[in-house]
Image (cartoon, helix red, strand yellow):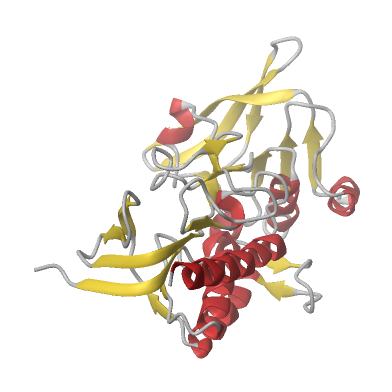
Length: 313
């Protein structure tokens, strides 16, 4: 028979929003349970230098998440390495099924499932995923020492990946379909001044090609977005950095969403379209998508859940 765990507040997700919610819900004596999900620590576990976390001029993303998890535990939050596979928000207590078989019953829910990397959607990209095509420079950059690499994208993620990859690659080509970047100016300035980085404007990836035995990338075919001209670009690694999509699989058919799947919350609030269910962090934030704003929303969600539970009693 499946184990059933009951809690006043169940937090689903373990990035800055989830762990901060755990800290605040614990301080409110709500004895929260936090289920970490498929990627404990969230996106920051796949970044290196974080330079915009208040109080730390430089901190490694994984180190920051280890500290956040420890803080939540120290406050009294129970943290469980499990994955919530389905939710039933039709009545209270809310019921959440997990991969482990455990059933979680909760009076209030805080959703902090974050976001995941987007892909181009090319068959050739899919064919070489893990064999030269990646969405995580910090995970895979080491394998491309002295090699030529292509990075696709034009925002903060793409520029940060390109700069990081210069630690390993002999050359990094940034392929962008426009002629200007959407990144922070300080990052753009670093990119433009870096001797190892070349930018290829008005281009997009048409195809990734390579060998089968052994399997590996040999280059990409890029298309000019205005003329349609195809150019061959030899490289050993292709890093896709075109942004992220909210990890909304659990709730996309249950809660109101907008802007490509982000969960809708009430103005100046983390309340969703279902009373007692709150959303925080990148799951709901299509505008800022920063660790510090995610943490702030985690705080808001816990405080709002505390007040709502008090009103119910």
